[in-house]
Image (tube, rainbow, N blue to C red; front, side, top):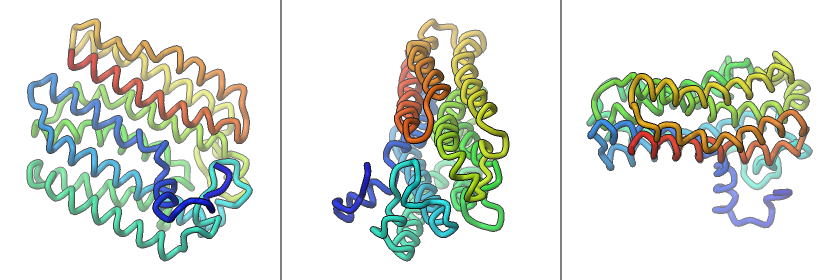
Length: 297
């Protein structure tokens, strides 16, 4: 996408929501629901509500990210990544603030249903998740600007979202769900790792001290590979500890794509990594679907 100027307002908002990143919100709900199904406790309405809340929080976080990266001068028209609506003047700051308010308020109101069925723990999780979405790039100590974005994504879009999805359907905490949340968090975080690796030079100039900026390209590539390795080791833990079925190894079918992605992150630079980013998001989705099927069977 070279420009947003030829799109309608609805299309601009859709693109600003970064649809290619929304698998990060869908993946944990798929896996958490599969474990609930495996335990005979799957409930469609709570699962659907958890999915919508997860999507709204992800979209709201993306909007906050766009707003504060623009206000801090991090996003520019000549940026390596996809164009942004605020930078191109297609949305105003006030419009983006309104979009953030509508998105997070909607997530909170929908989340009240999950609080009704899940209790005070879900209320705390919801409030902290929304606050963290703001704190990702806003506030006195923005996480993304201080090398903590990776931790935020791993915890909230991995562990919290996966185990929370399981909890609202079962009312219980599960070690199985905890272990399953690890590859979810790892692969979703790898989406951010590629993004930060691609933008490392721009972010350094803008003083956006992501983990990639703090620790460099060599570390970031190793981080990406490490998360891949961890993701493909977890099915062995699941097989030994929770579900003695060969189907839990279905995620290994996605391993060739992970190898391709590792080669890409070592060979490509700059805007060439946009394709790597897209495929990394797709890998998280493919892995999650295969893992969920393996858990259910």
